[in-house]
Length: 301
Image 1 (cartoon, rainbow, N blue to C red):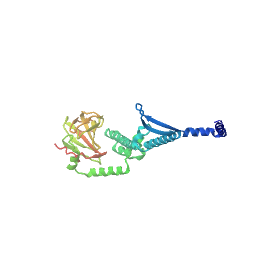
Image 2: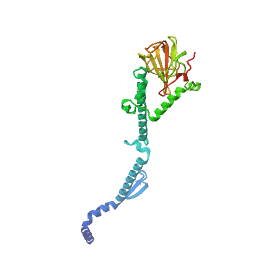
Image 3: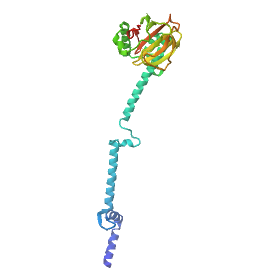
Image 4: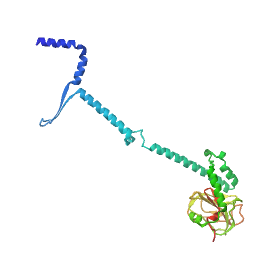
């Protein structure tokens, strides 16, 4: 016994340089048994033979697997949308599309606002129609930031073609049926539509206090008195159509009101300086161009 103990001691002393490494390896490779026993019957249910190294390896593999699985879920599935900082797929594209549409609508609205402001000046005789056309067509004066937008080359050509076509067009009942207008009033035409004389209307001789009706559903853009045209009312209809009624005795609707087809909007009269007797000065504008109202309405009693 003494001899064995001495030999063992010598061996340990000779391996003292590798002692830390042997202890670490021994701790990692020492085997343990994990038993799961029924607490009542002491029956053995499961039996696991483990060591620290196996536990560390398996724990590392499980952690690596979970990290990879989480990365795949975040990168390739919609679950990433639940993580703060990620957006719904396609949302950025939708936002850009909506932004472009908003810019287009804003540009269109700005153009319409400028056009209507200049048209009001023409109706109030603040500027001539020639000056209106000149301002509206000069590209150098058009700036979206200053509400001055010029029509493009194709638009100008189309406007010219429509104006020429309207100048020589005869009354066509099929066109009237398409728009389905009703007469604002019935009576004799005392002054016809004439582009050359810049008379963009028909004058209808009426008795004083005749009801004036809206030719279609629409919204009142302007309802006020001016020096030359007297009590004037302008209505915007669907399809970029505008109807204008001048020299009224009394206006029954104000700007911003919605009016229905056939609704009485004014009472005829002889207001304003540029009038020779009781009548209705009626203008019809379609898509920015003055058209002959007799091509769309009969005005017959």
